[in-house]
Image (cartoon, rainbow, N blue to C red; front, side, top):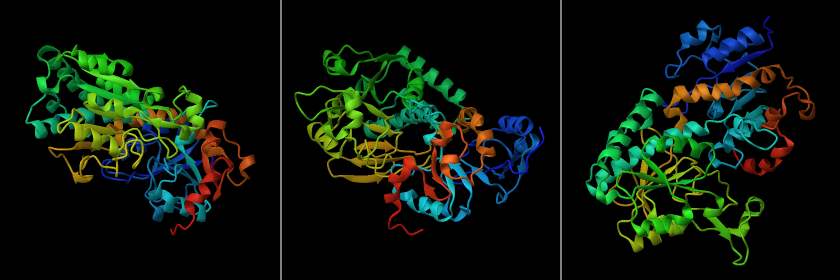
Length: 446
């Protein structure tokens, strides 16, 4: 197919931090888009991207630091305000739809520059299911990191060495395959020799059951695993029917996390989604039995928090050395479903520790308190697998994205419905589904 000069897409280099090595499109998919779809693709060179500059050049991409000639620019993470150009079409994870404060200046600048913003998070099917995501990889990396966190924390807090000390942080493995091999060996060690008596039973609570949770459970299940139903957790613990040669998981769904405020009312899932203010958290009842929490729940401010500062203070008042030692907050909502998540972390500074009795935070691992890992770009810790998975999902939308005429009004914009649902801004104006976001940019100076 002959290239059309207007069908040019730029792939920007990621610059959020030195760990962000992912790419939205992998070289083999770039090759297909150039050869089969007639697109012209420019790629900003990067020294840290998991795929080399030469790999992109070899498939026909044009390497260029300057993407100003590209009407459409795609990336993964947020773009610094200073780099946003006038009247461009941008596609990336903007993290703006919940009013995130740190990205409001970026949103304001996109509006001032009359840009079109497409957010991958909002590319959905007719049932509202996300089609382009990193959720599975976030769960996988988060669970690997969770085992690492637990091993480090218990060694410091209790001076006990567990098999988990053999697990490294996900970013320090060459591939997910290598990490999984380590996990299998650790699982075999637990199966043969068991865990130290003080760490039994090892019970991990998974909040949520979607793609993130499934990815985390995939890693967890590499160990000798047994599942406990939430309603049986207390009895299981009190009966002492556990084994040192197993690890246990509990998957919490909405009906386990919240209950109606009205005593006579029964839990109804659709009612909860529609009227979350009618419900309160009931998760505190499970906290005494859990060793670690993996938070995989989508949350927004109108919903109850599941782990609050008050919950943890109460737990620590009853037991000076409670079982709960670590929380891996994959969702990373600041003061959200896990209220003590007060900031996000990075792979090179991944944890902080919260003291429930005083409300104080300290960086890194501490012998007392609960350690929190809240890395907001966990899939970047397994960049190869994450990029391949994401590119497979994104590639089918690229031809339509490239060929659309963005000069027309939004109602005339010819994009496939899943992609059109993801258009937050069109030529600097909020599209109908996102007009509620206008309040987020009031009084913002950019």
